[in-house]
Image (cartoon, rainbow, N blue to C red; front, top):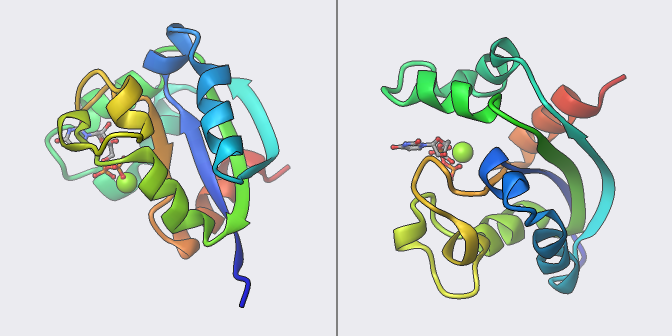
Length: 136
Ligand code: UDP
Ligand code: MG
């Protein structure tokens, strides 16, 4: 049975800065994801703090929010069967050192903080994150 889902993907500042936007989009498309919506934006630190609120007690929270707001990002709504898990698999582990061959983070990630992409971790959070960036 099909299980069409949408998930939020972000190409983070380290990847946009290195002009990897098109290569990363091609990786999504070659795995069968449709890019339903996309925009290139730069967010305020206060917006990054809202987006990453789930991490507010973590030691890396401040640096993470400063980083996500440090330069342009590309936010996208991806759609495919089982898109949430499929995107997490294509992204690879949070730390690029631990990411499998063929994943975006293995290929492009620089470090655990500059790991090139964000992806929603559940269907519920995907809805919240898509609304965060694309609710008019
Ligand atoms: N992060 C970090 N240091 C850590 C753990 C995470 O800088 O020790 C950053 C990293 O960029 C990661 C983001 O915080 O992508 C969100 O962390 P999460 O555990 O949700 O990882 P993800 O879902 O992005 O794989
Ligand atoms: Mg996460």
